Image (cartoon, rainbow, N blue to C red):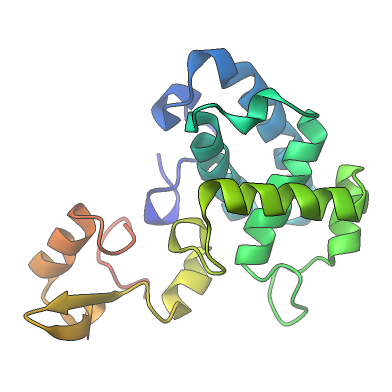
Length: 183
């Protein structure tokens, strides 16, 4: 089972995320810490996005997850996904302040932000990374749906369904279960 744009659900096996066997215990422990915060203060979509992020970190060679405290990695992962999805913006739902997130994870705000900066640098993440965006934010993403066809830039959601499917298969736009349009 998958969440929006192909994000694995928390119940998915870590093997399906291609997490190396040696790191599965560490990733599962970090994921459990994140799930606790998500269940109590965020939502399932944040929990699912954190799995995608942890899978990417685990596959890096060498993986940065082998060093450091699990709770700091959990806080950094939450901060990373939260900042990409404007968690700290009071106009967004759900919303938490960075200091609240730090208190919930038991990690100093500066430590959490520094770990998030390391994650962003390691994975070369942009400010609004389509692969880690929540479904509602991705629908509003200014560039995630643009493709070039014969020299013209078009929104893939305006194209016929077979072309939308082809763009998703090629990885040109985010994958949704069903049509590319989130509506």
